[in-house]
Amino acid sequence: MSQTLQTGLNSLSANQVADGTRIVKLGNALSRGGLTLSQAVVSDIMVLAVPATAVVSCYATAGGAPGVKSPVVFSALAAGSVAVNPAGDLEFDNADGVTAAEVVYIGAEGDLITEQLTVTASSATLLQSRSAAVLRSVTVDVGVVLGAKAVGPRGAAPALGIANIDNAGTAITFNAGDVVNGTATVSYIAQPGIGTAGESTLGLLSGLQDVLF
Image (cartoon, rainbow, N blue to C red; front, side, top):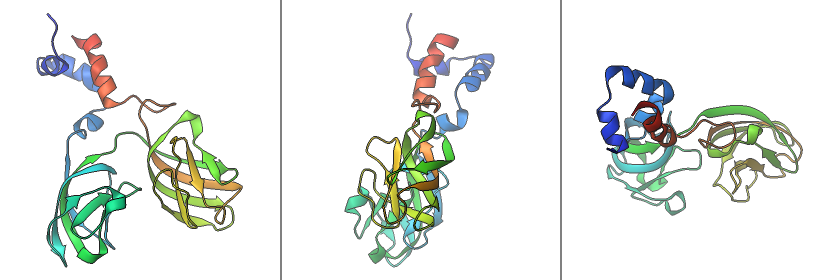
C-alpha cells in the first residue's frame, strides 16, 4: 500500500531515522519551519545569522513605535512595516525608530559560499555553475574603488557603491565606477540543486521514500 512521505517518516524505526539523517542535512530540514528570534535592531536593520526569504510575523519591542509591523516586499517598505532586504536581513522604516524586535521568519536554504571572482566588464560569473539565492556581502579587491559594497535589489542596475545578483542568478554585477575589470570576494547562499550546490531538503526527503520505505 502506498503512503505519503509524512506518514512514512512518522513510522520509521530508530535505525531508519539514523540512515535518513545521513542523507538529509538535519539542520536544513529543521530550519524549513519558521525561525523565531528576539534581537536588537541597529540603524533600522536586524542582521540575521540565517538570512531570510520571508517574514511571517514581527513585533517591535523597543524604539519609537513599538507594536506589530506588517511584512511587505522591500520596495514597499514604509512606516509600520518590515521587509527582507536584498542581503537577507530584516529592515524597518526609519520613521519607526525600531531598536529591538521579535520575529518569525523563513530562512534561506542553501550553502554559504565565499569565493573570489574575476570581474570582467563590471560582471563576475559565479564559479562551478552555481546560482545565488541571497547575496550576503561583496568586497572589491582589485578595481577602481576598493572595499565593501552594499547589496542592491536583484536584477537592478547597481549604483555606485552597490553590487547585486543578476536576473539569471549566475553573476554579480557592479557599477563601472567601482570596478570594470578586476577581482571581488563575494559571499552568497547558493541555490540548492544548481551547479555543484547540494540538493534541496525537499528533494532529499522525497528521495528517502526509495531508500527507507
